[in-house]
Image 1 (cartoon, rainbow, N blue to C red):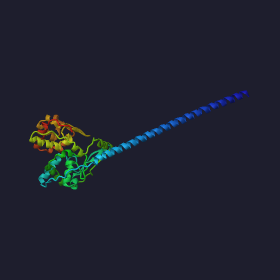
Image 2 (image 1 turned 90 degrees about the vertical axis):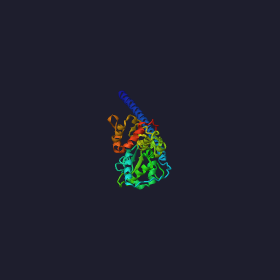
Image 3 (image 1 turned 120 degrees about the horizontal axis):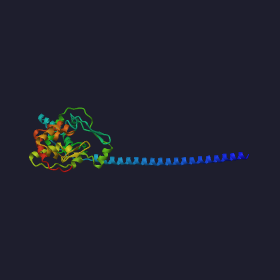
Image 4 (image 1 turned 180 degrees about the vertical axis):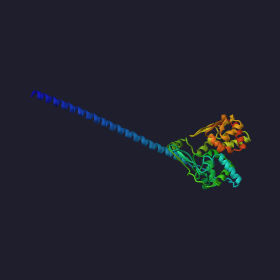
Length: 321
């Protein structure tokens, strides 16, 4: 009886110990579970707060960028003569080609092309010019090309009106006459749609509307002779989209361009070769300038190249854009 009682006592005491250990483990698991739930709850609150902050921040950016994009500008209606003479229309084709309206930014036949497509930044489709000239009046076309402002007053985006604002009535009239002579051709619908980064850029002033760029234009240095003055006109209305309105160099997401004071290192012959073939000093073949020179700038006449050289070779240091 005594042995049995002792065994029974040990068994009872052992059972009590097991029960206590189990209860402790359960309590620890409960505490761990509560801690995990609390952490998950706080994580969810933090994540929700970040999401809410992101939505609010983007809403603010959207409103600020829309305020810039919807701003209207007053542009006086200007009537210019649009020639109908075949020789002047042909000259308009040459002028449009040099400045990239034809065989450049708007496609080989001005049919319109996708210029840029990065979802986070935006998508830019250059318009079909053969269709655009049939949609707008001559005065509206002048306002769009020279001032970058649509009928209704809103500014355009991604158009070098800061260069074309300096075009003479004669040259602009010939360009429009040529564009009006183009046959209808199929092409994509024009559009500019901005992604999140694009809207941020507009909101903070990194990306500007055409009207803003024109307002901030820094003109190139004054010419010192009649020939150089003509060269300044050609450079301002042709070279400034890539090299800045001051011709002092510029940068964009695609490339960085030098100041055109580099022409001081060129001879008249090597400068002519650069414009006609895109081959720079040292027989360097330039990725951006090469196709532009062969397709567009090669249409400059010898006299125009001489005028450009006269101005750029002696051009003083330009102010910054």
